[in-house]
Length: 342
Image 1 (cartoon, rainbow, N blue to C red):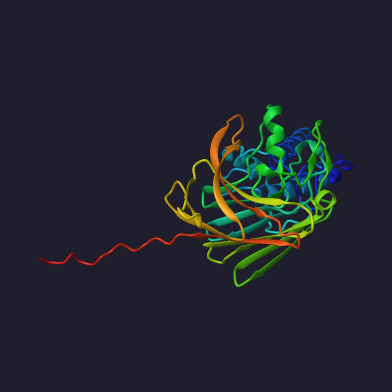
Image 2: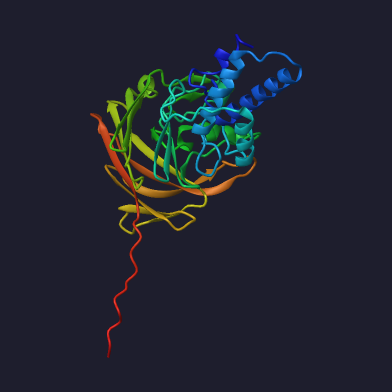
């Protein structure tokens, strides 16, 4: 076991598959192994204790405000109460890190707003890997706003579709996956170089990431900048394509099924309404905006209809930049002006 753990568990505690659901399952196995060793009076290897500690911290980092998991690499939300129980049984004290390290997952968190970003190479275990590099999810308090589409467990027909780049909240070029998924489920081509730099100043947070998953086929590099303001009310993004290949791009924001979306008559913005009533407004520059249908498989065994926002356009051949902003709608103060008297 001491020899296998460094292969299965990355330096920051994430399972090598980079799948939150697989990560949870392996952590449960390690906790059970430790319990068996204790019950038999055997010593628990330090490597096992250390792995449990680091994996528990990473599990916390991969949770949204509702207690469920982020939907990266063949994952479902999973049961929040089960996750609570696993974390309690882990006996771990390490808190989650916003910039974990080897896994490439990043957290931008301010006030009640949370972004979880996939800025890492697809996992070493191909069967779990999705073509979702630089995708992100966003939640506000206990409500999910922007999501990936999840995983279709036991549904081979849907599984391949859910692993595609288009099933993630990121950019895609010419409907080509950023990582090629073969018929047997393995990856043949994907990002070789994925970079991410993080900056924080006065509570504002910025992550600047890029990947070369389109370099071999389309001679393009995708760079994405994500910004979260200190008050959690302002999320900004900038997607840049550098290189001479490709014809069209699409930037997708898949919405949780409970989010209501409406496109303005002139197509200038989309108004999003969370179940609790809070509103957010998405605007963009450099792309056409539309609403489209999507499919959500965040909960194991359930398929739900949802919507997605799509920003699309034509590549210029010399580099393309699309800027977008997602801002919280401020509540209007009630009008306390007394009515006019006759």
